[in-house]
Length: 309
Image (cartoon, rainbow, N blue to C red; front, side, top):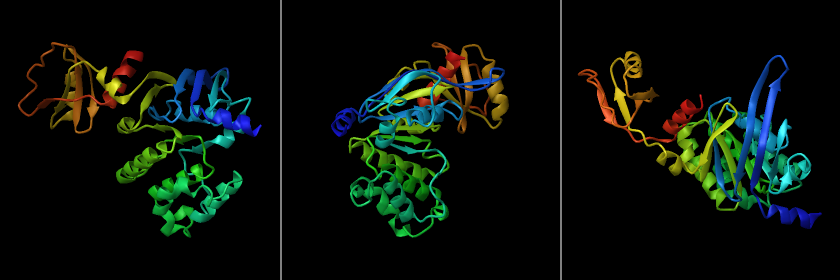
């Protein structure tokens, strides 16, 4: 049995085929996932990108054996998530979106506890968490509930890694932390990827997509597109303008009524306007700033949602 486990784990990829999940009763149902199919390569840093309610957490719970799909199949490192659920639990690390460690235990006690659950030890697998743990080591005697958001995030990642998982699932790990901590976290993921761990991370932050090898854009339980971030952006071929006014709401209504503008939506300080090729904007006013914009993943996602509406 041990040799079989090792042979299967040589392939740390994830294969999802036609997975669907529905919540509710016959009278009122919510389709959380609709025929999801993905093939995630071994050693890949893969992003599941979409807003809250898109189905990301449901998919993660199915892949980590916490929830059964209504239909479809999925394998993690060669193991079926239903038939081989015990094996899957031994080889995955899971960091849920909500901080789920023991608030009353110290940093060190949480880490020791999770290592013990998996019949591992902190000493044996310290090489996996060394770069991360050194940042929270000065607070090792502090209770987890008293840590900052960024420190909680690092502790949770250490606990998910301490048993040397083959596949790491991170469900919206940077939600609620500051921009610096978010950037540090993604730097840590790049280091973990170099250790050969397959990493699947979900996020509502479109800017984090660029840190992934490939991403799946998901909305309303459906995959809109799967590709590298650069290829997705390259597929956005319409002219794009950034437009700003002292009165942004009236401007947005005005833009949506101009012939040749396919879509207009708020985007930071500006509104973005997607134009049909060859469209020339009419004069909008002396106090209106208009400039060309370079599309990013968020523009692509909005365009895909419009096409699938």
